[in-house]
Amino acid sequence: MSFEEMESSGVLETSSNSGCGCRLNCVCQVVRAIKDIQDEAVEEECLPCTSNCFIEPLGELALPARQRSDTRVFTLTNKNGDLFKGLFKGTAGKCVSVFFRVEDIFDNCCATLRVLIPLRDQTVVNLFPNGTLSYEALCSVNNWASSNSCITVDLHCFCAVQCISDVNLGICED
Image (cartoon, rainbow, N blue to C red; front, side):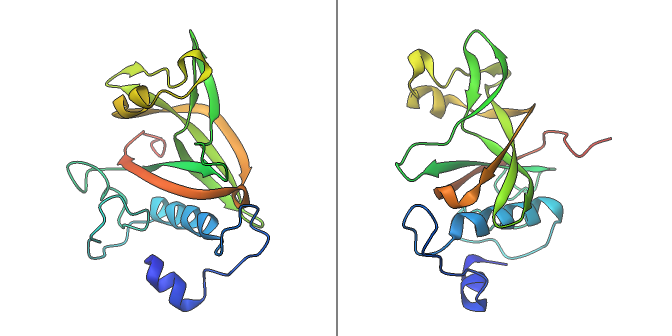
């Protein structure tokens, strides 16, 4: 279901207590859509924005398109404009990521997110040298790995979600 279809069908409800002054509770709805897209592949026409979170099937954000994918990588932005961070077990200061995979969504827009390890090829990228996000490091990320770190978040606390890529992390393999 596209954003426009969700909007016209009333799925996107207005919320005055979203925590960030957003008119719609859109972050919650987008993360729900990402979860649905990860769970099942549905053939639809390609949308003009190639990084739109509502693009189906999973794999459309990947290059080349429609490769085997099990994860839609995304970031979340706090109401102050900062990217949300999660920790994973790492070494030498390389233990913080801004990239996530939705594992579950439940109750009133709570979600379990898996923290994804940012990689440049096969090397872990230190996104926060000296404790500050390095946009140069962030822009160098071209791959991700699955971590064993998951966090539960209230999606009402975020004002933006950006889908980055569709990748195969082997999460769904036995």
